[in-house]
Length: 384
Ligand code: GAF
Image 1: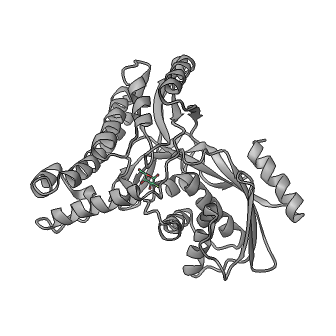
Image 2: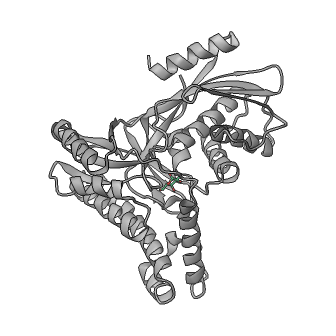
Image 3: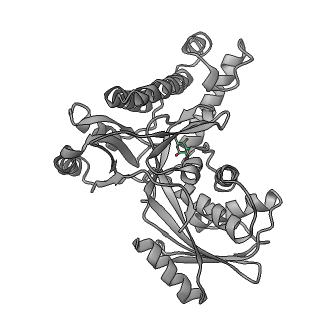
C-alpha cells in the first residue's frame, strides 16, 4: 500500500476513532501548451503517479478539522467563520468550501487528514490536487451531485479568489479528469476535450526537479496574465472581434503591438506560437512522430525562457544539459515557471546513465541537490 495512504488512514482512525472515506487526488504533467490556458488556448496535460491522499468524514457539528501530515500542522475552524489565515495550506481547502457555499451547496462540518507525495513547489500541481481532492470529497460526503468538470471549475475559482493566483483551468482539469495512459487535449475556450493515448514505446517521461521552489502566487504569474490581456486590448483597437490571444495571429501582433510595446509583443508572440505548436504537436503524436513532437518541446522552452521570461537559470541549465543528447527527444520547463521541474522524453535504456550524469553536473553548477521522478500517467481524482 502507498505510504501516504496508509499514514492518512492510521492517523485518521487514531484521531477521530472511525473509518474515513479516502480520496486520491493526483498531480499533473503537461506535455505542451504552457501559459495558454488562461489565454483560452489549448493544453495537453495528464494526471500522474504522484498524489495527495485525503481521509475524510462528516461531523455532527459545523466544525472543519484539518490535519496536514506533511507539515505536521492542524487547523480548526467552522463553516461560518472561514477566513484567510497564516497557514497557507488551509486556503486551498477553505477556498473550495467557500466556493461550494457560494454556489448554494449544503456542506456540513467535516474532518480531513491529508498527506501526499507530490513535491511542493515543483510545478506538479500539488495545490490543484488538494483543491480537487477536497471538492471531490465533499461532493461524496454530502451527496452534492456536482460533475467533475464543475468541481474542477470551483477548485480553480478557489485558487483565483481565495488564494489569489489567477491560474487557468489546466491543473484542476487534469487532476480531476485524468485517465490512465492518456493525455488530455483540452480546449480551454470551449472546454471540449479528448483523450489521446500516449504511444511512446521505449520512451519515458522523466522530470528533473531543480529544487528551486517556485511561487505561483508570486506576482509574476499574475503579471503575465495582465500582459496578455493588455496585448488583446491593443489588438482590439482594430480587430474588435478578437477576445483572447487564442484567436490572434502573428500578423495582428506585428501590426498592432510591435510598434507600441516590445515586451507585450514578446509575451503575446510566445502564446500565439505555443498554441500553434500544440495543435501541430498533436498531429505529430497522431502520426507517432515523437521526434517532431520533441523538437516542439525544445522550441517551447526557448519561448518560455526568452520571450515569456518565466524560466530561471537552473531550468535553463537542465535544458542545456540535454538539448543535444540524441537519447532525449524533447525537453522543456513545465508549469508556471521560476523553478520547479523540466519534463523530458528520454529513451528508456539511457535514463540511468543520463540521470547520473545530469545530477552530477547540476550539483556542481548550482550546489543544489536535484531530484528525479519518472512520471507515469494515471487516473484522475477517485475514491480509493
Ligand atoms: C500553472 C497554472 F496553475 C496553470 O493554470 C497554467 O497556467 C500553468 O501554470 C502554465 O501553463 O500551473
